[in-house]
Length: 474
Image (cartoon, rainbow, N blue to C red; front, side, top):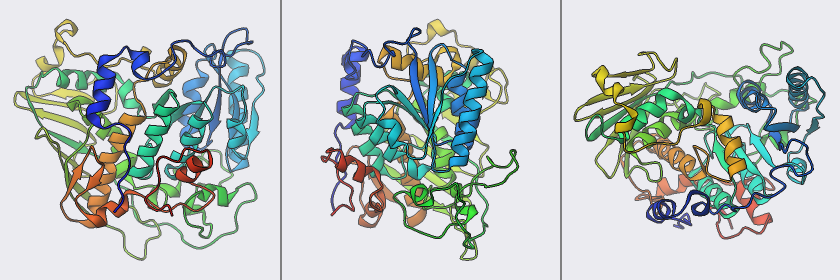
């Protein structure tokens, strides 16, 4: 069995980041390239492009950058569905007409690689389906672009390792769409736990939702606006049906409805990575494990029957064991959020208003009232609790954003080994430094074959980045 190569193990990574100044430690140049500041532009704007123009791009990522027109401008969009690309162009155009009282030229593309070839574009936002995260991140990094990419970072653990190593080798600023790190109550909860306010941490409980079975498997004609082969990317070639991809409704309220691909294992692993990558990221941040991971997994799940087109997991229960003895339980039967339990009490955090006990609570309210000056360990504070602004400022300063490729990979890895444990339904041991199981069958699930010419490993190979190979490579 081949191993997944690792450029930096956890111990080396921590030593590197702890002993050097922030920009030098991360390998970023101390002089900002003129390209990054838009040399020749009167306002020194960061020029951005949006790759993937669906629900998350429309509702979160484009608005997150459009509200900062004095820092950055979105000048191009790409989507394999031309209708979505055009809707995104119109949205950007209308936003700038309102905020700037002027028209900004936005070009649309069917192939995002044409964007990566543009020398005048400094960075890209990638808001594509899960199976289309790793490849464009690798290609963008190799093209010298900084990157914002939606979570989870990758569809497989092997992809995630490749992505993290390429991004680091290319010295790119990457932000994961794990926006909870830029939310006041999550930051506060993790900072309190890291400072031992609840005593020695014993366990973490994570509640996540589930997706229903169902879906229509009947083959349909491919819409004229959709390049379906490109949408499939490195996954197997299969017939088109709307419930496999995204809504094609003429109703503007439905066209960006929740897509069917979120419920198919060919393109995602379900809620264990969909929501799990958010909450596991917070659990890692709180316990100080963001550059490590579990050492064992014991999981089970219910899976849809043969009559269901959608095939992601149903009800599930996962137990992750960490080297420091902390046990993390993940289940759909727990309240949605993260509960840290220590020897001296507990802290609960979830989404919602930052000043509400419904989003941040504790066994004793006094645990939440510890003055900042008494906290020795301070965590990264995103400016104005704004995740996209954090990324833009990191690009300008050539420093790490609140999330990065390695922490995103490690959080997603914990979710993916949970999915593998659910699939095999037996206890497994995991080595977070070697990134391998003690089980050959489990190790075969660390990677998936890529359909040429698509796929992150195929893209890296084409660009000459050949040190890291897929387990399925010839």
